Length: 370
Image 1 (cartoon, rainbow, N blue to C red):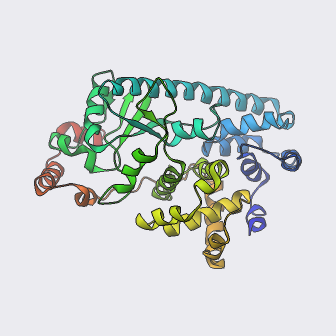
Image 2 (cartoon, rainbow, N blue to C red; image 1 turned 30 degrees about the horizontal axis):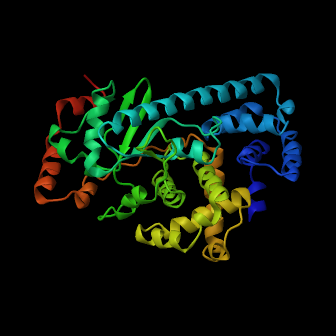
Image 3 (cartoon, one colour; image 1 turned 180 degrees about the vertical axis):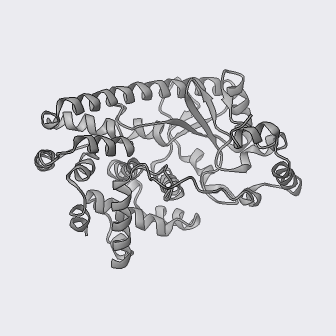
């Protein structure tokens, strides 16, 4: 099945997949060297690498494996410039994360870094390899508005609220509070990571997190297993939108390679059943095996039929060839979706009234008009 996939991809697309790893055996280095020599359209390769959020990693790995000498000078310079820009961006975002944690610690607010910020240090080696666009933070529900107010008081701006009435119920409206911005960086404060009425699995993040810095006692990295499940949920959410990139699958692969049985065990599937992600877990494991020949327990292979494998291959081919997902847009959000997670009849009434009577500021923002 893997050969069936790779044979339908161009040399540029196969090179992209081959460079999506953190370590290479000698055999893999030789295969990579042979593959690089077959690439003729380097502009298309750079288009793919940039579109899938992997250009920094590709640049680094081409140099690390000494395959950069086969890349034409103009394209090699573009790759190296992209890597340096990504490293600079990551340093900036890390400093901003530390700044936010420093502000939050004064109010006894614990923060768990999610997605890019956590992965860059936990599995990518803090080398500027994981492309990041924003900062994702998880805080306890009753501390979310406090953190938002702290950031607003320290130079951050926020997207407009649908209605001022929603201020008191912001943590329950969706996965994160309205995005905030400072110096071109977006910050998203999350309170609910899974669609659970009890929010118990999100609360488990705070019970299992680890602390990376002694001088920042309120900043934590997430437990790899629950974080892995959240990344799958996030990937599924963006399955049919422009936001899905190949780097999302690579995140799953490197997490599995780094933490192994700490992630893949019976508890993972129990968690997945609790949040209705069991089928998605099996499918994503199968995709990792197709892309990188990853080794997983037999139960994963048995759970995927031949017909499903063909569908997955068709999806992967389309997805890899079209990194900017032309013709796709963000999924329309079900406005009544948060109702089930908003506690109390009074808060539900506030939520509905706010949507019926949105603010003028929000309407101007939503319709992009003055």
